[in-house]
Length: 119
Image 1 (cartoon, rainbow, N blue to C red):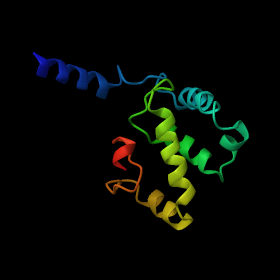
Image 2: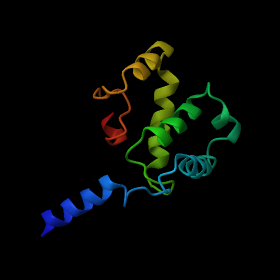
Image 3: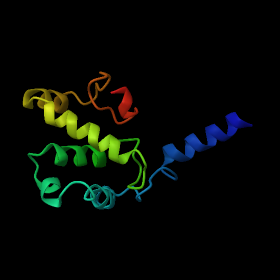
Image 4: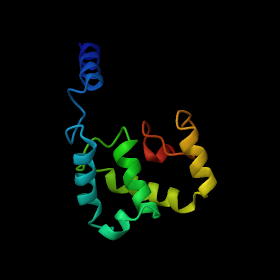
């Protein structure tokens, strides 16, 4: 019985019927996550593409597969881990990551499919 429920839930999640959280629209997701993050990051910082905070927000909205909506309780710690990551990452490493996004298996690279404690 439990196995059947898991299969049904996985099918619904993969079809997009559940797990969308903020409607599946990245602009809605962006607005809602931004609203949550402005509790501890100024809007001006989130708007500046050169900041680690902006890069973290972009990653959360467009690449993260764990955060499904802005009310997720791990959003603040996942955001903080990403800000630290982008703060210490050299520009050339960032470019390499963009060029090779399919290979996100390294524990030191943020991976949208695993918990931030395992990065």
